[in-house]
Image (cartoon, rainbow, N blue to C red):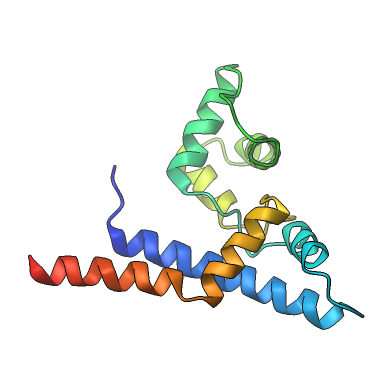
Amino acid sequence: MAKHFGSIMDFTRQRNNDLMRAYREQLALANYIVMPEIFEKVAESPAKRFWVSEERAAVEISRMLAGKPFSRMRPNKREMFQEIFRRYIALRDLHPEMSLFELVSFIVHQPAPKFYFTPRTVGEFIYRIKNGWYDKQHDRYRQHIDRK
């Protein structure tokens, strides 16, 4: 099932707002600002939710249930899916009437213990947010749609 562009942009905007919230919190807490340290603290900060789509999480949880090894996946993503899987197993036993997708959808919208991004990725996201890169992408897409 393909997502329409608006839902991707909503997800991106929410993720960016959450990152900027954590970034501002870390700046406020810092005695002195060393950006790589700030980015590392942001990456380790609690997130409002797991920043992965319900569909992607459901695919990975299905793979884990089938005992399939992780495809070439970065360690932080693997850690995120292991946490989602741990929560899935606990919830599945409490709610056997719910489907895998329903349970995973519920879980990914729960607060996450951290962002599961590398400090470098956090820095790239924040740089793009501050420079309006995401707004330009959205504007470019809107112009394309309006021409149709």
